Each structure stands twice: as structure tokens, then as C-alpha cells.
Amino acid sequence: MTKKEKAQYIQTELERLFPETPVPLDHSDPYTLLIAVLLSAQCTDERVNKITPHLFAKANTPQEMVQLSIEEIKEIIRPCGLSPAKSKAIHRLSELLLEHHMGSVPNAFEALEALPGVGHKTASVVMSQAFGVPAFPVDTHIHRLLTRWGLTSGKSVVQTERDAKALFPKEAWNKLHLQIIFYGRAYSPARNPKKNIDYITQTVGTAAAKKGLK
Image (cartoon, rainbow, N blue to C red; front, side):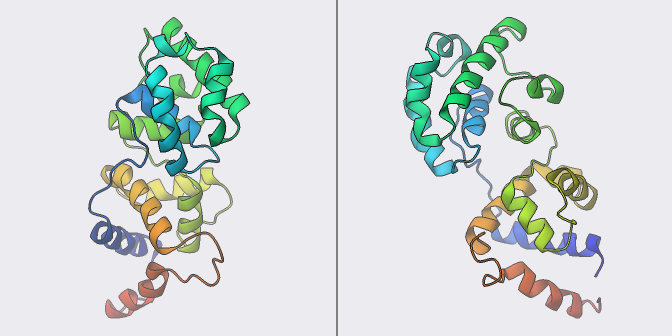
């Protein structure tokens, strides 16, 4: 079975398992999504969703956020971890949105990645989920699973993203990256990976045999 054939099988199974893909981070617009994704660095989505209601009750626009002090923001987001850096980034990016983008989140990779605290993965999530632009954000679940499934070398997240985009159709990227995350959480947790032989790893060989592939 070629990588392309394996990718087609995996896409079909993920669609069967996860036909609906709600964005895991609670948000109401591109700005609140951007802040939630920034907070999710080294923090679970579940914890972020517990913290953001408190933050957004005080400030859910750049205009309101800059009225808070960095210390106020830090105190609210402390449970998410890395609060000193994240609070400074949230405050400064809100200032920059007001200064350069009329208070709106830009829908361009370069502009997003120029904001403090916003890397390529965060920008990819915002572009795909807020603006519907095809992107393939690679988080730890996706990097781990695509490596495990033999679809990428696993040398870097950059290589994993490049390989994923080459193997899967562009129109499926935005949904697929969420499906893989959901799959990882449900079927292939990161702990004790050698003991957890996930469903797709178990069945991809069977699927190949049925099609007469090796």
C-alpha cells in the first residue's frame, strides 16, 4: 500500500468515526479564537475553556483587552501556564491589532505570524477555523500519529505539515486536522504508545490485504 493509498484509507476511516468536527476551543469570533489558541500552548483545551470565560467576561475585544493591565491578564490566565509570557503577548498583540489592523484579526499568515505569541501553528488554526482558508495545523497529536502511521518521517513538524498537505486533498485539510486530533484523544493516547496499538494501525494492513495491496 502506497502512502497515498494509506492516506485515502485513513481519511475514509476518520470521516466515518468523526463526521462532525466542532472546534475544541470555545470562541465567538476570530479574536477570541486567536486568544484561546495562544493560551492552549502547553495547556489542554479543557483547561483553556475553563479560563477563557473569566477572561472574556472582562475583555473579549482588543479595545477592552488593552484596558486591562498585563498583571490582571496574568492573574486570570495563570492556570493555563506560561502566564508571564502569554499575558504580555495577549496585551501587546491587542495593541498591534488596534494600531495596524483597525482592531480586527488579519486573515493573512504573514500578518498573523508577525503578532507576538503567534507562531505558524496558531496562525494556521485561525486561518482555517476562523476564515476557512485551507491550512493543516500540526500539533503534537497530528505529528505523533502521522509519524506512527508511516505518512511522514517525523523529523520535524514542518516536514509533517508538508507531507500531510501532499497526501491529503486540500479541501479536506481544515476538517482532517481536527479529525486526527479527535482520533488521537479517543483511540491513540500519547501515554505508553507501545502498549496502545491504535485502531488504524491495526486495520490498515487488513484494508490493504482486502484490496490486494502490500
